Length: 113
Image 1 (cartoon, rainbow, N blue to C red):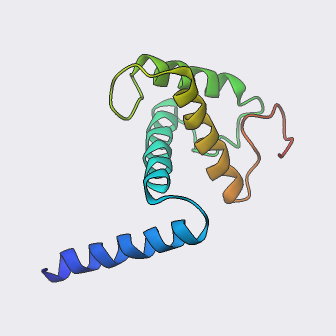
Image 2 (cartoon, rainbow, N blue to C red; image 1 turned 180 degrees about the vertical axis):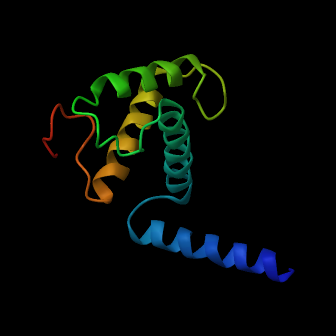
Image 3 (cartoon, one colour; image 1 turned 45 degrees about the horizontal axis):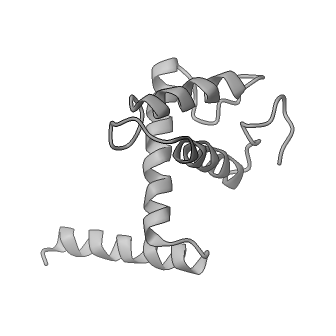
């Protein structure tokens, strides 16, 4: 492997080991990362930071995100997806927000989980 590929491989290996140590499968960790990237793009187009801290009631922001995921507009594969998968998208967004010390965006107001 060339040095760039070696660095990328070692970085991904480290991420995989951290995910496994945290009790999360590598595929699940990668899915969460992909969903967060989609969420960041969605928020950017709305002119919001991804933690949507400036918005008091985040639920409508999440509802539109969920609708666009459901129709495939924001789904990773670009195809309409089932309700349970939409729940995964919302859960990943909330868990990422909580992991950096922000409030749970699924809760109205400033209630943390």
